[in-house]
Length: 63
Image (tube, rainbow, N blue to C red):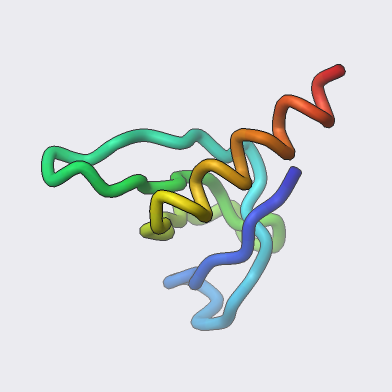
């Protein structure tokens, strides 16, 4: 399961691998991962609905 985010190394939108979903102090969700092309760390802020969709898709893939 991959999310797309902005890579600061490549300066382009790319897919993230090894994505971890966490909740920030303010209650929003953040996906953290690495760029598939250059290996730079990436992050993307998600809405509650986007985070729920991502969790649901992760569960489907892990089955």
